[in-house]
Amino acid sequence: MISLTDSQKIGMGLTGFGVFFLFFGMMLFFDKALLAIGNILFVSGLSFVIGLERTFRFFFQRHKAKATSFFLGGVFVVLIGWPIIGVVLEIYGFFLLFRSAPQTALTIIHLGCTNQSVPISLILGDQPILARVGVNYNCICIINN
Image 1 (tube, rainbow, N blue to C red):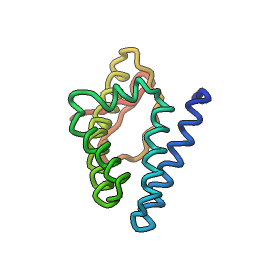
Image 2: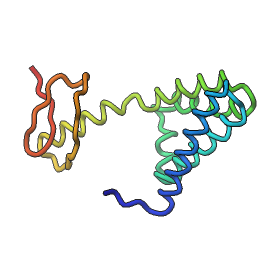
Image 3: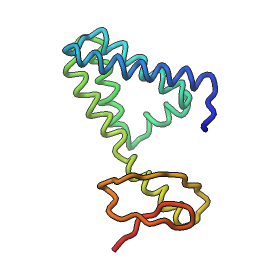
């Protein structure tokens, strides 16, 4: 089990409440107040979970400037009172920020399969993106044909 510090536990709670308020705000026809509270809780919870320095390093990388501007601009637009436009900007920025996540996960799986000191304890179900999966050296690797 992963051990969390107290600030990370607080961050998980804040992030969870943020996602709840964002979802609930969208369900209530883009309620401005709920979306604003959800945005503030989500971003502050993320800072608590990974730390302020890593949060700034994540958001303010040169190649992620466009994504960060859309995401934080969407947060700002929601806060000033235009929730539908703000949520659209946030979603676009979120997808731009995390578009490299699947590639990173596949890279980690590949490094684990080539025994480059990356521990892999990953259980994959039937994922349509991975056509064929083989087990090698206690890790999961992709078989290319």
